[in-house]
Length: 153
Image: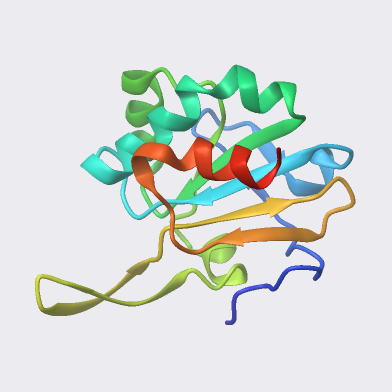
């Protein structure tokens, strides 16, 4: 599956979050959505990225953004990650990788000279009409909000 490009309609989805609430992309129409994909809950980079979004949540809301996090972690891991880090936005445990594949973020990765399959850290900004407005392929985990706000100021 390929990564949706800017200007294309965002792949729609309906999924349960960490608390069994249904999250539908169509319910976010009229708002900008930060849909961020992270490799694994409770790892240093994913924690830094999620906490950076949390720490600037008010500023992002003021700009009209809603935030949804997605990884292939289990419901329990997502619940623990959200609770431990006091994250104010939903996390989707996409264990079947339906959303992950729809957005093309699953693929070959390399770390410490080893190749493996996993989630590429990416963020999609979806506009009020449900189109991909911007794709961040090089996410700065400790300054992701700054990346987003720089683009939208």
